[in-house]
Image 1: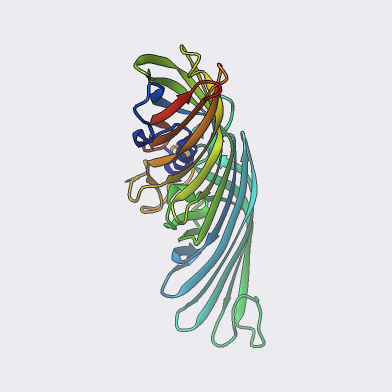
Image 2: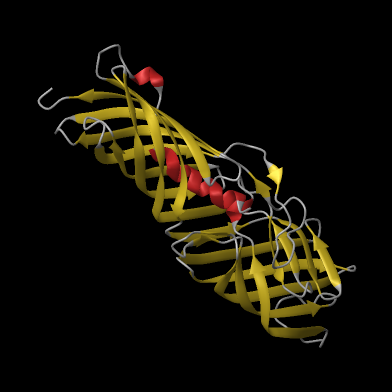
Length: 335
């Protein structure tokens, strides 16, 4: 449902290793297939700024990119089921042969539109729920705008305090695509692109099953990962790092260690389905995408030897589940 959201998680999964080109023909070659998903969303920090206005509606008026500009920021922290943060927006417009408008808002984020929940109580939200104070100023003729007054008395200002609003996360439309934010009653509706968007993921928990072979002998078991990632949604890539452990029927492949990788979001995607709660996002502001990642990992096994390899991971759309291929070399102690 929260496609982009999954996207980010997909990045995290870079943990699940590897490219076959890394292995050689020695008897200690290891190849694995991993299949799993997100167990816990951990915590996320969002920082979004924009952008270019696509459209905006305030009581009695509609603006677009031909007659208005927007500047906004969204900063939110998601820690388990707790969501907090702030958002600001400022729209400047000239309409009706010279009427200047300025729409300013300051919002306090305190909850989330339900997105993807996990059994430990963590979540990846589909939207940020806020209460905003909004001021709309209009000035006629040459009186300027945004100050609510002028010498000729041609400016008027209206205020809407404590207006419930929803802000769409940028992971629901990567590569700077338009996102939506507006009031729950529909009186204010804004669609705008973003110029920067960073999501920092901490403590993501992943897990699943693995199968494969080591030097011709079958290997089976499970794996677990703890992931940290920094995601640049404006450009569609992410850097990943963390720990990964294997628990298997072979002590040479029962191991733990760390990984480092890089993830990318594919272009394109499919439209998000309607959300069961909250205002519907306008067409073109939400899409479901998958994810792909690759990188290196290093582990120490239960025999005191080492495992060095590469991984390649593909995420489903939305990116909550994944499959990975791993190619590695297992070295015995002292080799």
